[in-house]
Image 1 (cartoon, rainbow, N blue to C red):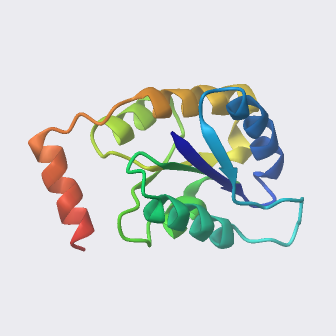
Image 2: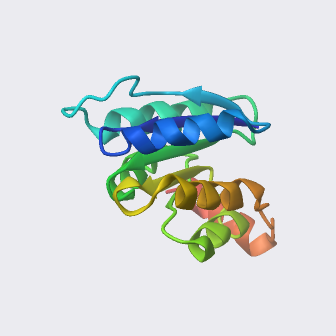
Length: 147
């Protein structure tokens, strides 16, 4: 599975820690930036890069991970792109539901509120949780795509 990852300055260090761990796994990781700590960067830039890469990837199972202070801004930005279903991964239940019910393809993490171990556990659960594919879930995703 290919994973695109990006972060603004508030998520930069957490992203670097997560990249190390994710590269040791079976995932193909693509760092969409920032490549250096820039206190003046803005999360929409990285949200667009990651969400666009996920949407344009030929692999329907490609995923994205975004990190910003609260995770909320990155989710708002990513969700502006048709076909992107970004969730904020603030706990295990929310992440499990976002994958199982909503086929989330971008995970946004609140870098201000979690350490690398907590973030990795959330990411691992999100990556391992399959989409249930129930007719009602498919119908709702179709409705989202028609907005």
